[in-house]
Length: 210
View 1 (cartoon, rainbow, N blue to C red):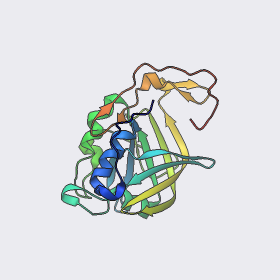
View 2 (cartoon, rainbow, N blue to C red):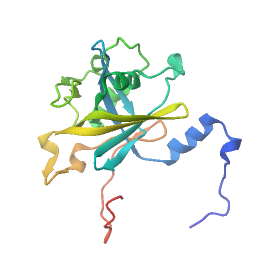
View 3 (cartoon, rainbow, N blue to C red):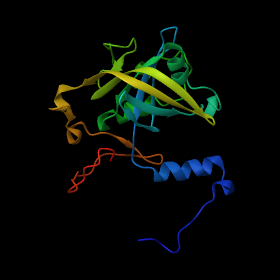
View 4 (cartoon, helix red, strand yellow):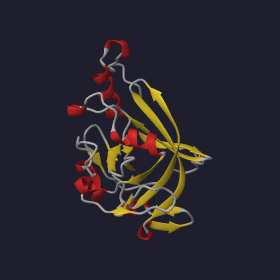
């Protein structure tokens, strides 16, 4: 029920970073898109993004939001965005709990010539429809062709149309479903991570958008 002693904020009264902290601590849990891409010179890139969701069912489209570089590369364009712009194709690998440490290693700020598959310690797997490898160890991988990039402030929404899906047979339940409890998706919180607790169903929920 509503609380009469709620803490309230107007966006005009807080900084960009303060509002960012409020958002990432409230819009949780968020799935992680572990994006593999390739530069025009052929250097492999692998980076995680938690501003990630389904954008459309027809055409089947996934959305990631890519912000500017941080730390030593503050304000620069991230290699993932550059690669997707230049080649127009990429892969979104889903992150399971056992891949958490490898995913975290790939989030390091490194130069564009660093092969982040090697940094993460994972294996490139050739794809069927795009000239970018998936992560062999990932339970699910979506091969995408770029649809459009939409700038919003300093961030960029990247919309990609799914061309091909790879699912580890150990996690496929048949009838186009995955065994979510078995592949154990990793979720992003406000600087921390979480796995699944026990799942449950609600009666008479029929809205496919939920």
